[in-house]
Image 1 (cartoon, rainbow over the protein chains, first blue to last red):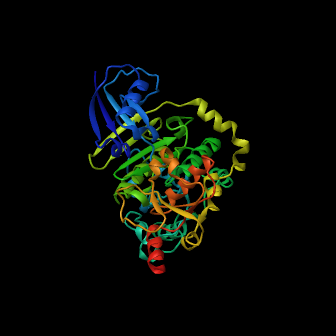
Image 2: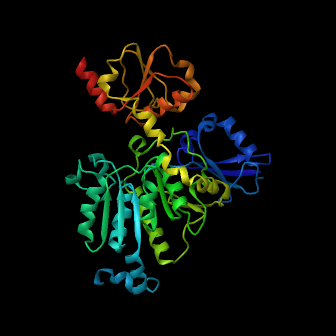
Image 3: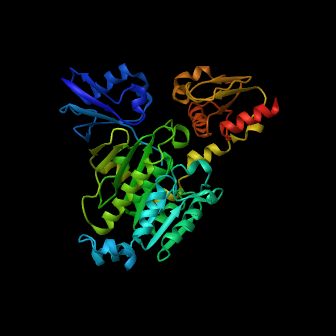
Amino acid sequence: MILKIKYFGLIEEITACNEEDFVFFKETILELKEILFQKYPKLENTSFKIAQNNEIANVNDKITGTEIVLLPPFAGG
Amino acid sequence: MERYNRHIILDKVGLKGQEKIQNASVLVIGAGGLGCPVLQYLTAAGIGKIGIIDMDIVTISNLQRQILFGTTSIGKNKAIAAREQLKNLNNEITINAYPEKLTHQNALQYFKEYDIIVDGTDNYATRYLINDASIITNKPLVYGAIYKFEGQVSVFNYQNGASYRCIFPKKPNGAEPNCSEVGVLGVLPGIIGSLQATEVLKIILNIGDVLSGNLLCYHALTNKITKIKFKKNALEIEKIVEGRKTFHLKMDTENCVIEKFEIPVEKAFQLKNTQFIDVREYNEQPKITFKNRVQIPLSELKTNLSKIDITKTNVFFCKSGIRSKQAVLLLEQEEIKNSFSIKNNLQEIINYINHEK
């Protein structure tokens, strides 16, 4: 399936784009994470959560949506 | 009540609603980019009692976004300077200024004195402290945070709802930079702070849908607002509740541990057998070179520990002294001792080097 992945905050600086289409053949959020780590090794040292269909997902969740967000915490104020 | 006429004539507010606002109390932590607009709108709205905690001093680089202050505020404590300005906006309410740092020792006492807590701080350590203290004192927490052109807003612990730890259970390792290091569009905290003030008023008035269980993400460049839902994680909240009796005994380690490693630039250059490590990213300006200086960006430090010469005294520096502190902490975690962080900012370091030449 083709996922639309959006990168928020400083993740955008690691991926050098704020969204991209991603062809994905596996099943879970964890598997997606592993593929993203291969593509963007710096992500591994970065804190973020993954949301699908605008809801925070757990790593073991199956991917059911096509809209994915990588969401880091922000510190600034 | 003429002052509040435009509230009173609103059908969802009315005289009763305005009375609720005047009977409410709100504690705002951080009178910076977010705190300024929050304080201005809440003061204008006539919140009965407002508390402001901030230990920082107003500097000229704050004025680009911290619109409560003027040039005459420079050098003053932010909580005190904010109170002065707000008194002029509305002298019918109580405003308490606390020119001090929020700690595990004083947080619960302050939180108990207010109905609603607003987080306008700029670092993870304080954000987690605020979240946990809100859980223990059972206060709704209106959260806001910014990064460059983006902001996040949510309401935690609202009617036993989800908390910050339900999205991000653990404090990040601290490599994430703040506004003074990466910059921020001046108007952005104005937008995010205004959204926070709106949530405060909705909670008080009991109107609309409060942002509980939702993280609102705003992007100034695309004008996109994304609301991300998250569930309450009862286990994470239970852990905090269980630790309530020892909460005040916790040390604010991040600051306590580090302070003794923070040294002024002149002392750093007096140390013997030193290696100076610039932990800024490679693209940061200005580039500087001097004897015994190497560059290892903080983001790469953990994977480049072999580059650290443990026979030397390692002295870290960066743009503002924040990332260099984190570098010392990171080395401590790896059991590498004898490292220091220069507490001066880069310009002061450059001035010192030029002066010594």
